[in-house]
Length: 131
Ligand code: MN
Image 1 (cartoon, helix red, strand yellow):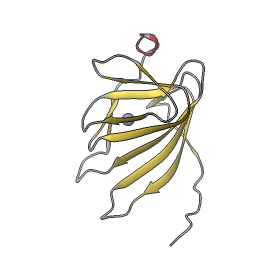
Image 2 (image 1 turned 180 degrees about the horizontal axis):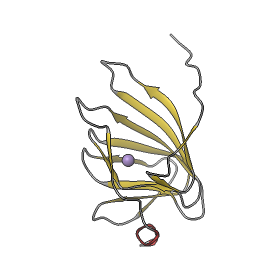
Image 3 (image 1 turned 180 degrees about the vertical axis):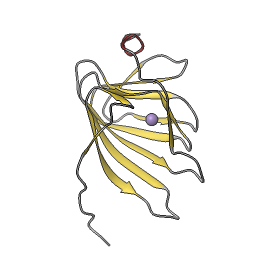
Image 4 (image 1 turned 30 degrees about the horizontal axis):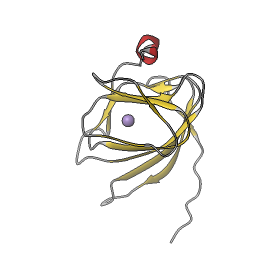
């Protein structure tokens, strides 16, 4: 066994996130493992850009109040204990609600080839507030 050294918390890049979000890498498997687990902490109003995951993603909210939307769907509130799965290739975004922090575990896998995540446009204020 190995107690893994804590890596520094990483500020989510402005190219793919609106507002302040930070993540900690919890697990990044070495082949044949494809495991990817991050804790992501969003400040109020922060959210990631439209994106999709090659092999899908499972989110598990641990704290606060958040929002998630799939392309063509409604902006949906999520909170502690909620688990959301987005299937491979489904475009979506997730983040905090306007007035609260939100933290979630993000779990996904690396694909055989190509990028793990495809990124699109930032979520506009109009999209974010459309409820
Ligand atoms: Mn996602």
